[in-house]
Image (cartoon, rainbow, N blue to C red; front, side):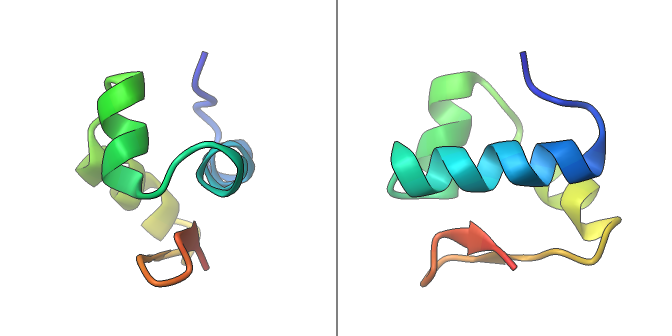
Length: 57
């Protein structure tokens, strides 16, 4: 299950990106998530996706 809390979501997504996925698109496709929704929720706590680092920073 994907965390609803933005801080928990940040931890979950960054761990998944680090350990299993080469991009946010790959993660979202595999987990059937909306990349825009993930970005929007994490933007609410001032995090943006950095494609070069493959992490939300």
